[in-house]
Structures are given as C-alpha cells and as structure tokens.
Image (cartoon, rainbow over all chains, first blue to last red; front, top):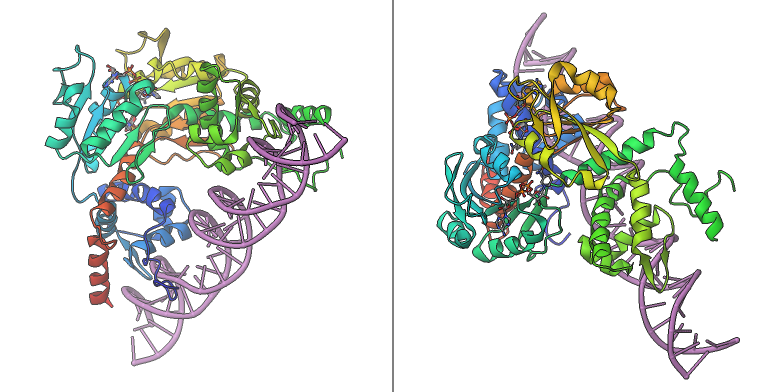
Length: 238
Length: 238
DNA sequence: CTCACTTTGTGCGTACGTTCACAAGCGCCT
DNA sequence: AGGCGCTTGTGAACGTACGCACAAAGTGAG
Ligand SMILES: NC(=O)c1ccc[n+]([C@@H]2O[C@H](COP(=O)([O-])OP(=O)(O)OC[C@H]3O[C@@H](n4cnc5c(N)ncnc54)[C@H](O)[C@@H]3O)[C@@H](O)[C@H]2O)c1
Ligand SMILES: NC(=O)c1ccc[n+]([C@@H]2O[C@H](COP(=O)([O-])OP(=O)(O)OC[C@H]3O[C@@H](n4cnc5c(N)ncnc54)[C@H](O)[C@@H]3O)[C@@H](O)[C@H]2O)c1
C-alpha cells in the first residue's frame, strides 16, 4: 500500500514475467493476421490463434494499457505497434553470435531474427578456418576481437553457441565488454552479475520433458511402473 | 496402506510441471559431478551447480521419493539413476527429425541427444537433393516415407524443423502415424489432439524477452519512457 | 550412550499466475 | 434517442509455486 496498487493499476509495477513471455506469441499471431488483411480482431479470435485462453489474453493486454474497443475488439495494426513498443522492438537491437559451428551457422543464416527487431552485427569464433569467412553477409571475427566488436557495434545482446566448456568464459568476456543480455545455447548454467539477463535454450531438456510425459502415457492404470518400483524400494528401505 | 496416501505423500498425484522441467538440469549437474569423481553431494552444493535455491531442490527431489541421507547428502550415482528413471531415460527413445535445413542439420549432427537417452532413427525432408544423402550416419528419407519411417522405428517423439508454412501439416501426419510427442522449432502454434504433448523452442521469442528487459534497463529512474508515453495516451484518451 | 553437529524433508505463509464471470462501455439498428 | 447485443477490462476465487525455517534423522566424537 505504500506505493500504489489499491484501485486498479496493474500498470503500477512492471508487467508479469509470464505475460512478457507471451507477448511475442501475440505479436506473431497479429502479424500473420495483418498479412492476411485482417484489420480488427476479438480477444477470442486472437487467443485461439495464439493458443491461449481469451481471458488470459485480455488480462495480458490490459497490462499494456486499454487498447481495445468494447463491442468491437482490437485494431490489429495498433496492437502490433503497442506490443512492439512494450517489447522494445521499435528499435533494432544489435546482436553478436559467438561460436559458429552447426548451430551458430543456422542462427546466422536465419532470416527470422532480422525481421523481428534484431540485427546480427558481429560473428566471433575461435577456429582460424572460420575467421575471415563470410556468413549471411557478415565476416567472422577472431575471438581476440570479441570485446572490440561488442563495443564497436554497441552490442547489448550476445548469443553463445560455443561448446559448453568455454561458455562461461565467453559469458564473462561478453559481460566485461558491456553485453547485458545473453541467450545461451550451451548446456551449462552460466553465472553472471545480477543485472545481466540470461535466457537459455536447451533442446535436450525439452526432449527429456517430452520423454517424461511419454513414459507416463505407457501406464494406463494411472500408476506407472516407476511408482510401483518406488513404493517397493520404500517398503524395503523403511 | 495399499493405495492409501493421505498422511504425507507428495507422491500421490504426479510431479509438478515446474519440477519436471528442472529435473534435467539436476541430472546434468549430477553427471558433471560424477565425471569429476564426486560420489556424494549435499542439496546446497547441487543447488548451486544447478543454479537454484537449495530448498527448492530438496522439495523437487522429495517428489521422487526420499533418496537422501540426513547429515550426509545424496549419493550421486543413485540420484542420477532415480532421476533418469523418473524421466524415462533408462530406455532409449527413438526420434524422427523432419526438415533438414540449417537447423535440422545442426540437430542431426548434435551428439548431445544420443548421450542423453535419445536415438535419432529417421530423417525426413521434402527436398529431392537431400533425400538419399547421409547425415551423421542416417540416410534422409523422402517425405512420402514419413509414416513408414515412424512406424518402422516405433518413433514416439518427432522433431519439426521445417518452414512454418508446412509445420502444421507435418504435425498432423506425425500424429496420424502414431507420434505422441512433438518438439517444434517452427514459429507457429500447432494444434494437435489433447493427448499429444507439444513443446516449442522459439529463439525469436527468447530474444524478444531479452529485448524487453534490455529496454527496461535504459530508464534508470524506474519509470521507462514507454510508461510515460502510455500514461500520456491515457490522460488524453480518457 | 550421549551430545554436538550436519543435512534432509516438509509445514506453512506468501507471491504469482490462471480462470471465471460480469459490469461497463461501445456500436448499430430501429 | 433509446435499447440491444457484443466484447472488453477486471474483481475475485482458485490453484500452483516458491522459499523460509525447523523438526526429524542421520553421523561421528568422546
Ligand atoms: N547443434 C545442436 O543441435 C545443438 C543442440 C543443443 C545444444 N547445442 C549446444 O550448442 C553449442 C554449439 O553446438 P554446435 O553443434 O554448433 O557445436 P559445434 O562444435 O559445431 O560448434 C562450436 C563452435 O564454437 C567454436 N568455438 C570453440 N571454442 C570457442 C571459443 N572459445 N570461442 C569462440 N568460439 C569457439 C568452434 O570453433 C565451433 O565453430 C554446444 O554447446 C552444444 O552443446 C547444440
Ligand atoms: N535456423 C535457425 O536458426 C532458426 C531459428 C529459429 C527458428 N527456426 C525455424 O526452424 C525452422 C527451420 O529453419 P531452417 O533455418 O533450418 O530452415 P531451412 O529453410 O534451412 O530448412 C527447412 C528444411 O525443411 C525442408 N522442408 C520444406 N518443406 C518440407 C516438407 N513439407 N516436409 C519436409 N521437409 C520440408 C526443406 O527442404 C529444408 O531442408 C523454420 O521454421 C524456422 O523458422 C530456425
């Protein structure tokens, strides 16, 4: 009650993390609609396109402001603009990719980033055979130039696609050079200063989560084999 | 006592999703420790390695059973086994990758899957130039053979790395052929029957989330420009 | 055996996220 | 102009998740 929160100001403090994570999904759905020539959309329609519940969608959007029209819906272009602004996509963010192996190559060649507010400005790799080659129009710089590249292009977001063994070292150097957000593809927990934001993409983890659910399905009775085994182990152990 | 569990059995109904998502992280940290020759680990140490709070770690592990020793900690090998079993990683899961462009190639060549309970058994692509070529020891099959490949290798998990435009179609075919878990890299919301589990990996979304936080940092006062603009818009609009 | 020390497993308060359900607001039709 | 139908925005109930703090349970020393 000290600050403000009593009446209705969900806007008082920041937007919930869960909402922020969904805004890009809404943005994509809206872009698709806009491409199809749709000018107005209801929360119900947009929610379906985004794969969420319509109440959740409306609450999420309400954190940004009151941008809909009751009885009508949301103006597609206007909403695209508002969400883009909230996410900081009205400007282009310079990005550096470190590590241009299989994954780094795929990322560098991917057109979906440039079209969504990101500009890959620098590529860095330790492999002498890669340094100097050009990938999707950008020349690969040597590892020694990492700091210089970051500063020169005012890079705020770094992508790590190196082997796990060197990922922490790369993260340290990126942070020291001024990068304050990192997208990490290496299967390792990075430790960085608290003001640096790290997000990880870990495909093995995703597969393992799928395996868990897959295994569950194998036991129609509700009690899966592993549970029985566990109970047995407990019965013996105690 | 056969079916009972009213007293204290957090095991009664399933493991929370948030916990399942962290188990692979613990597993990786434990594997690293095991490789280093560590035989016993405390919740505090393991939590640090996994980047979580130790109480959370203990609660997560408690859902699996009571596998620690008070005053000592957890036996590394035993815990690796228990978590693996819970995740269904004591068996190998056959996987099919559909779409072998930049990303599909990276995935097919990645050794980190095989070492974690997954076996890439089939590769499928529509491009005639790719069909018949070998990637990491597996021959690429034509799109027409998708169903046959899925059935032949008893594939339960499918990976979609095709362009977004065809992803839904591929998903439908995978499901029809018997796949019940899908890992989707295409930037689109897939619609599948409820018993099919879908997880998505979307790098653009991750970058956009980073951009959001990055933008916030630009306003040291706590109130960012977008908030001021929003308030202004509201003041005028109302 | 007892005591001091360590570490697990978990009850409980709190915070966060989701969903329902409906009043408020808007446009259109008469 | 007034009423009707539609859709938003949100209060409130519910459910899930987090993390503190501590009793329970183990180890090892004397
Ligand atoms: N390929 C995948 O599908 C996949 C899937 C999941 C996770 N990953 C992870 O992503 C990372 C990259 O995977 P990959 O398949 O591209 O590996 P890769 O071996 O093909 O590429 C690694 C690249 O990093 C470069 N590199 C090595 N040390 C470096 C350093 N100190 N500084 C800069 N660059 C350095 C290498 O020269 C190489 O080009 C790994 O951590 C891997 O575990 C990859
Ligand atoms: N490359 C990246 O870093 C990256 C990043 C984020 C998202 N993605 C997404 O991942 C997907 C693949 O990306 P990419 O860069 O590998 O694209 P890509 O164009 O290099 O590869 C697409 C592959 O799919 C194949 N294909 C096309 N239609 C098919 C069909 N009907 N059935 C089977 N195969 C078919 C093509 O022959 C090609 O080999 C895309 O949806 C992309 O948006 C890629």
